Image (cartoon, rainbow, N blue to C red; front, side, top):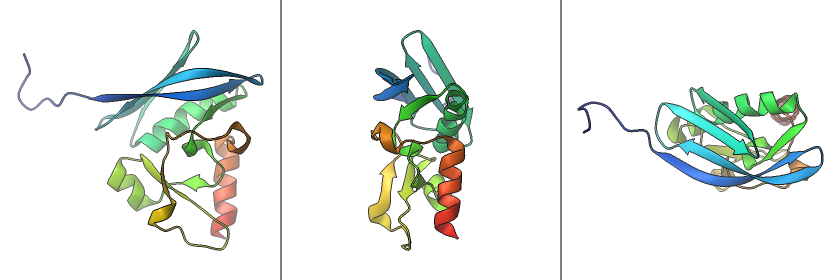
Length: 138
C-alpha cells in the first residue's frame, strides 16, 4: 500500500551515446521526473548516479566523474554552448537549459532538454563548458 504524504519517485528512461576511448556505446539514463532530483547512467558494466538540487547538477556531477576518465556523455547538457539560467533551472528542475550564442541573449527558442542527443564533437568537459559560457557572458 501507499503511505499518505509519501510521493512516489517516477523515473523516465532514455538512451544516450557514451564515448569511451574513442568507442561509442549505448547508455541508459534514468531521470527522476520530480524531486528528489536524481540521474543514473549505466552502460556495459558501469554505472554512475547523482542526487542534487536539480537535474543539470545531477548530470554535471556524473560528468565530472567521467571527465577524469576521458568519457563523454553525448547529450545537450554537455555541449559547450548549453547552460541553464536560474529561472530555467527553477521552472524545469534543471531539465531545460539555454543554447548560448555569441552576441545574442538566449530566447525561449534556445531552450533545450539537457538529455536530448548531442554529437560527440560538440560535447566537452564540465570545466570547458563553464569556461565557454563565461566567455559568452562577458
